[in-house]
Image 1 (cartoon, rainbow over the protein chains, first blue to last red):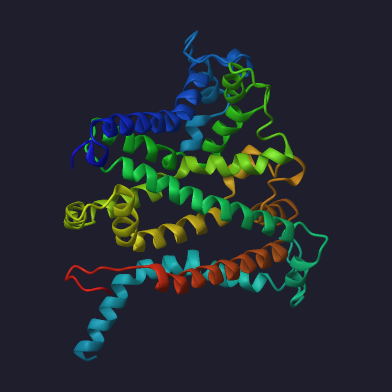
Image 2: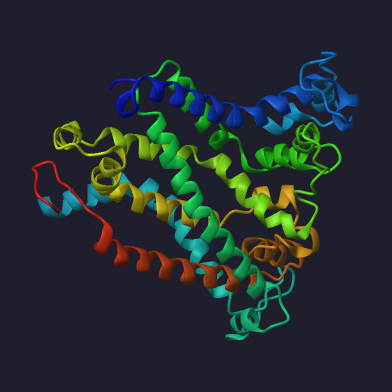
Length: 75
Length: 298
């Protein structure tokens, strides 16, 4: 099937735009939670919240595996 | 033993693992819960038969059951069309061969594989009034922080909108259905000079109507039973605004330990869902159009 279809060239651009918006909308929560996990324990309740990785630290993962026994729960 | 009897027995033995699992994990517990719904079992005391008292209690006005049922109907009534339209629109966008269509497809389906509580937690942090990223983005436009999940007036609407995140599964079904429509119809329509809207409403919709029915039923049943995100995001809502029927069941069963009453709530919901599904099937005879491979109309 052609990329443009009924609306012609402009239709393809519109499709791309809408698809891009939808993809971003669906991906954003996952990306955001990943961000929170990477940014370190202090930044979780910080306001305004960071939108990009500021100080990358794996301290949250360490906390989850040591203090909350995450690996054990997977079993 | 004769030959046919032996065949029958061996067939039965082949399915016996599944049969045992079905009885032990499905049919048995269903029967048990049905029996319990006529008792006042609270998990510790012995069961005593109380007849239909639990069922009468569902409709007595001082419980949350009826208001929860109303909220659930409202929720499902909004969610089903929303998810149907959303899934169909996204599926339509994904039928053409654009670059990165596969990535977009996977991204839309991604939330469906995130478990309920985890996904709910993500949304709770995103919609929080003080620390949420939503309000942060809105502050760029000068909008004051909106209490998406902290205000009884906004909470249910927010939950309904969050449900759109889960359109991945219906979307995949629509995608398959859309690609199953023979292109000859569209070509013939273009020859006759049909507009895009005409093609959509007269060709696409009727040809995928069986999938529409399937999706309506799947979405409806899933949303009637939705619970995990509810517990995590609003815990019943500010002032019970999102205290849906499934939450009432959960509270009665595992917080108040009223197993008998909770079982009756479950069976009440089962009957309601059964009736709604049957009505849906009935009505589908009017608007559903099945087109077999041979070319006749089923």
